[in-house]
Length: 529
Image (tube, rainbow, N blue to C red; front, side, top):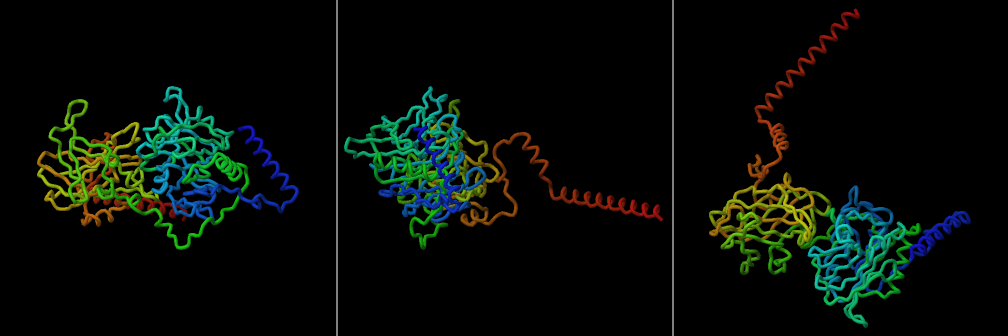
């Protein structure tokens, strides 16, 4: 197969060169663009036509060419960017829209993923696609960390033990350095019985027998965790609402080869009429508005939304759209036997769909506001503690903790606590931990939502607070910082009197320099005379 693709590539290249000599007026773009299968197409992301008729090198919306408007967002920077015929992804993760998530949880579907040569950077698993709850994962094992196993593997619902595997996964996708098209067909209603098949470049390479459909909560492509990261040019991603036949899979793989890998350039073309579609608003909604709602009616209170808790009881509070939190009768203990601070860990990416606390345009979100009701004398502070890492393999608590900037009234009325995260958190945060360090048995907190903001003005306006003219002491880091950092901070911190004194000294010094210069000039002129 590899030799065939290599020779075919050389043949196409030689044909193009000969064609140029025979007739300079003939160009490759005059050839008809190879067609992909359209029947059952739910979403189609073309790397050479990201905007339905043109290639926009600055767009952050990869538009769906199927006509179903299942667009999704990417970030454009120095390492993740558009080329003429692909989106270059490097150690990043991007979420597909909910319609695609719903599709891969059905009885029958096809996923096709076409890319250039993969740079497999991961130390544990090269995760090509996955879900936050780890019930969907297409990955290549790193043999050194997996007892010598190096499969390309598709995991669909953890209850299914018979997964499709491809031996020597990295080599199977190598394809002489020009990349491959991976296809997965899943069909619970196939004539021969439930089956899931992996194809590489149109050839079946592995199959499994599923007993259950998938239960993915999200769906992403790429990964930003160094344990799972990789990079490649993404040529095309397609989703179908049925299992394609082997012949259709082969046709699509050959179309990918011709369009992306053999040097023929096909100009972008309009695939569907998009009159009236507002693309700047295309990705808004409950998953992209940077709000973490604690709303039972929306189905967001579950074991996946709350990753874990300790030292507290939590329950949905009656008709109120929130969660009641109060301490356990017996606090949980850590490994050393010490009491653990009451805390609830929230998988915020389940709601905001953005890891690293960044907006869709890549800007930082330095402020968070928690909407809650509190009762009890021991409720004087609430902390936000970030946790970095992978949801299903490792965690690492980040050193810095943000305390609430404004005081808690704890009078049973709705109030808003503001958190300044700008000096504490950096990228890669996976969980937000809401902690109650002084909470005792007499206290109860009803949490309604956490909302993230890009600016201080937005955060304070939402909380109904005026921006203080002088930052309160609670905005200073609450954990011990390295000695060097403390020293630097002290050196950079000066009082108004010191600033004034420094200004006077600077003015005097500048005056002396000016007098010396004038005197030197006078001496020089006198000598000249």
